Image (cartoon, rainbow, N blue to C red; front, side, top):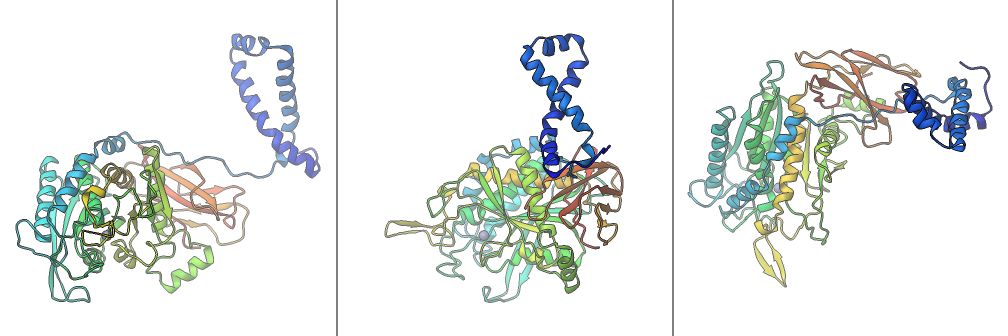
Length: 509
Ligand SMILES: [Zn+2]
């Protein structure tokens, strides 16, 4: 209802004054419901205070007339996930004591260099692999046989870092999904169980290479997650994997990713955990309340056509891997108070790599988790002391409670995704035309527990989703007065328990 258009200054004032007015009106509305409350709350106060409240209310009534000229505003709904009790239980069962035992056991094999002994019963990568397998088998028995253990064995042909053909084995524990419509969707979490003293010798397969942090920490997190999560049910399938050959060129992960591509596996997301156990940096900075998630913005395998679309719609910050990174942050921080997930908007640390890269190169959604402050005197070094400086990746430098926290970050995200429906397909804007409102459409999912959809949005310069609105079980929605020129939108699918999928960014016009 607009009677006249007030001058700009007045309009601004109306906008500012309108806010307390709504608060007061709500207050009065509440006490109006009970005459006793009115007496107590309004007539029971001093004349002066009553006059203030009533005049603000009166002012508000006048302002009502100007509602039509209030500037268009976004619906201010914050991201609204609420904790899932099943996920809370899982996180509570992840044990730093178990993680410490796993890391110390992995270190006890002396070296886990990819080219070290396969047959020695106590030392080398073969002994370490057999032990990981035995542990997975034990978790499987404890899960009533639901966790399925396989060895993905292959012969690596010679490369620069593998002089002779070498046997490599990925140890894989699969927890099949329990929902027919979702069990083909796979969430994969990995750590690499090989180690090295690469700084002194890339091919040195005999020196002690404890690799407690790089990457017994990641392997232990994956194993502990497998132990705990295999006692629970998820709609989608979760794969827990310990891979070798990372230090020799991401070999184990590459082999598995290549087969996944060939077999057209539907991998919803992949997380690699690599160097997640040190809380005192080589720079002396101590930080045990944060983990970094590395995600690429522009996909590693982007085609020319995809690049043209991305440039046209502004999708540099909205690859599926970046959506995964945002999801990990939102989900983990919902459960872990006083623990921060720091998003790093690059594929990996400067000039470096990890097991997520072969997945990215094949078009899968993948990120890397790493501690915030690395100690480079520990990584890939022979265990020794020189000029008072201790080198070597030894177990005593690992903060086991911190590794458990990072495992919980993983578990929260993996469980959330595996319980939720698939991310909505076919999300797009209804038209590519210039419009003041934004029309979003998408295809409906097929899961029986699908409850509806959530639209999230943010200003283009913001790193994280700022707002969300649950729109019910529909396949299109209009965001009034929010232009796709000024905001980034995405859609999530929700199940009836409130589990939310990864966000789908509308790529096409
Ligand atoms: Zn590593």
